[in-house]
Image 1 (tube, rainbow, N blue to C red):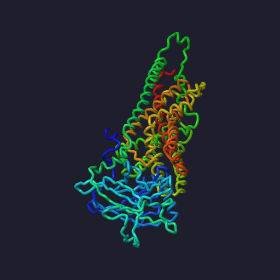
Image 2: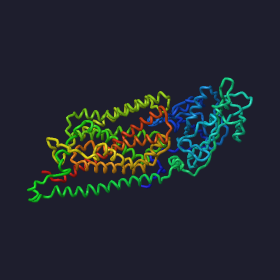
Image 3: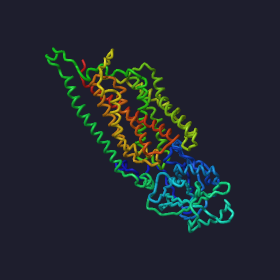
Image 4: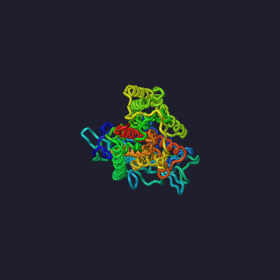
Amino acid sequence: AVAVLSPAAAIYLPGVAPVDYQAGNVIDIKVDKMSSVNTALGYDYYSLKICEPKDGVHDAAENLGEYLTGEDIKNSPYQVTVLEDSMCNVVCRATLTPEDQALYTERISEEYWVNWILDNLPAAYMGREMTWYSLGFPLGYANKEDGEVTLFNHHNITVEYHKTDLGYRIVGFKIVVHSVKHEYGSATWSDDEPPPLQTCIPGLGLQSFDGPMFVGGDNAPKDKDGNIEVIWTYDVHWASSPVRWASRWDVYLSMGDLYDDQVHWFALVNALVIVLFLSGMVAMILVRSLYKDLSRYNRVATDEEKAEDREDTGWKLVHADVFRPPAKRLNLFVVTIGISTQVFGMACFTLGFAAIGFLSPANRGSLMLALVLLFLCCGSIAGYSQARTHKMFASKTSWQRSTLWTAVGFPMFIFAIIFLLNLFVWGAGSANAIPFGSMFAVLTLWLLISVPLVFVGAYIGFKRPKIEFPVAVGTMPRHVPPQPWYLSQVFVMLIGGVLPFGAIFVELYFILTSLWLSQYYYVFGFLGLAFIILIITCAEIAIVLTYFQLCAEDYHWWWRSFLIPGASGMYVYMYSLLYMATRLSLSGVSVLLYLGYMFLISVMFGLMTGVAGHLATFLFVKKIYASVKVD
């Protein structure tokens, strides 16, 4: 239990295997896309005029999940030699044209950060006041007061290692940035053998210099053609560390203790209070009231009551209609239940694998890859539940058509939205765009795995005996009396959706921060407990409000039992709008991207909570009507 609740487990079960380096080994530094908290668009590291490897730029992504999450990992000209400190290593010199300067100014003004990777460990930025473990390090600095734009072109790299019997393992990768206008006197520059720099001397490090490297503003050192010369350099320092390799990600996952674990405990306590409140309502209203109802309905009537021809009241009165199939959109309901169970199964399996450590951030793209594959593999669950529901209602729609809609309806809806969003991302030239090859690979997996599994699940479901109702359905539907305002569908959805949302809104804040502010989220133990509480909340609120509805002699509960907890997805989307307005500074395509992806997340959340409430309500209704004597 302690391992599950820990915000960062010490061992990642399948994690990346450690590499033992020997003194003198050369290790290449990789680069990922540039990202900014002010936009949802990442850009290729080499989209700027910057130093490139001599043997050319090559992709270094390893799995489909990295492509789906927009990772754009490539090689770089930066290298470190194990246990060898070095200073003033010259990477290259570049001449920035006015167009290059304008692009640098734009990216630096939008606060883009650079992401480097060494031995699968992302670079941490050592600032003046704290160390940042999530965003990389800044490309430069833009002074909004005087309009000067500074480029950080010198990087002081600290590599922390832990010595083992087999060699040296890298456990830390930190960077301090500097801006230096390098000078090399009257010597002639040669890329093969750069002349000694007057501003950075090997063995001594940075010396006094004229000033920072401006690429924008009045102080930018432009020549007569308006060009600027920039020289990139870096230092390397090796430092021993007591941190073991298995624990090297701990500081990243806690982000340098940026958040206190007590916040997550507060979220759990908040959710438990809501569950206890609802459980109290269930115990008081359902157990006591239901017990009285059953005692009254099942006891033998006296002669006086027979003479008065006692009439049933409340929920027993609708016993001949309570299991009548939905009057509207029956086939849509059947398909929705199938799709929702698929989403629910994906969420359960993903949280389970994540909580025990299989989806460590050390395996980039593993979480996205797991979500896609588990969603595809849960197609059998969708087909089975759809078939059982279809057979239970004896729907007039052919089971093949219903199964086909279950297999292709929601996935095509997701694909259409993502493809539309990708068009805008491609138009902006962002590295976040999912490549056509990756999209084609997912479509192929869907056609070869998910669709067949849906039909296999449907076949098994139809072979199972039909779900029998405890009471017979009447031939003529009963008239539903006018309902009080507090039992209207809109009102009960507003009430029913807010309680499940209230159980998880604190954890939702951290999840949104992870998604849109490039921070790590790995407290899946807390999230798993919050998920269990969420499902209990959905079940209880759906049962309570459905019971009130049946007591008011309204037997149209099928859709409502789904929509009551499913309305929590609407609250998730509303909260995401509030989060965007208060925590993010998005504009243009970034806003569209945020709204589109949060819409998909909210819909899937609504489907998951809706089916949890519906299944619990179905079992409850079957149980109470099986316990009452019907003449």
